[in-house]
Image (cartoon, rainbow, N blue to C red; front, side):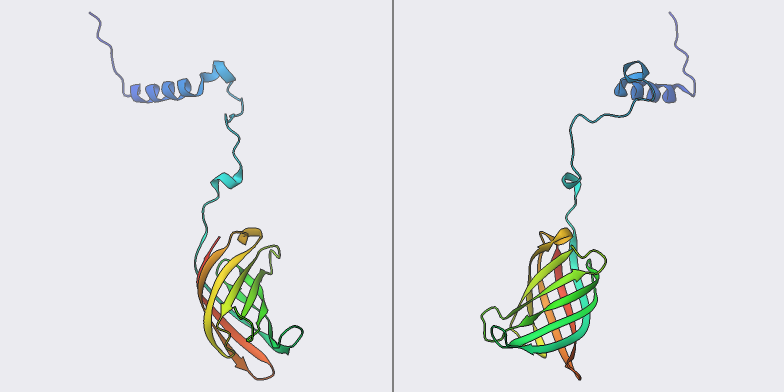
Amino acid sequence: MKILAVSRYTPYVCVAAMMLAGCGGPEAQGWNAPLQSSAKLSSESFKPAAGGSFTASYTGTYKKSCKINCGIVFRGTGSGTFIHRSRLNGGFSPGISGCGGFTFKSMKHPADTFNVATAPCRFPGVGHYKVQGGTGEFASASGRGKYSIQKHSNHTFTASWMGTLNF
């Protein structure tokens, strides 16, 4: 009866043998053969859900506009979670149901935008917003929260946004 001698390298040899067997070994593909996937995968299939808590602050100018219904138009710049340095454009039409809306547009990636509907429209004041989609990275954006807009001299404003943004 022969006894098999076990050396301290035996576990490493076993692991190497299992790895080669699992890969088909050098005879099957060659050592320099590229790895091949049996299924084509797009980058979208691995895209994790993004977003979460959203805060933003903007400053800019406002003016009255009576093109369709008298309201207030806002234009500003600032920064927010996920959208980073960005532009804020939008307005309030107090006589219209739903009241108003704003678009947040990335300055670094202008194709990345998201839109919010606001109610009630109080300027200066506070209200609620609901995210209603967007473009680019924010094409499937959703979320909600609160906003506050303050009026300053020379037709300037500051606005802060706090809530969620999912995309």
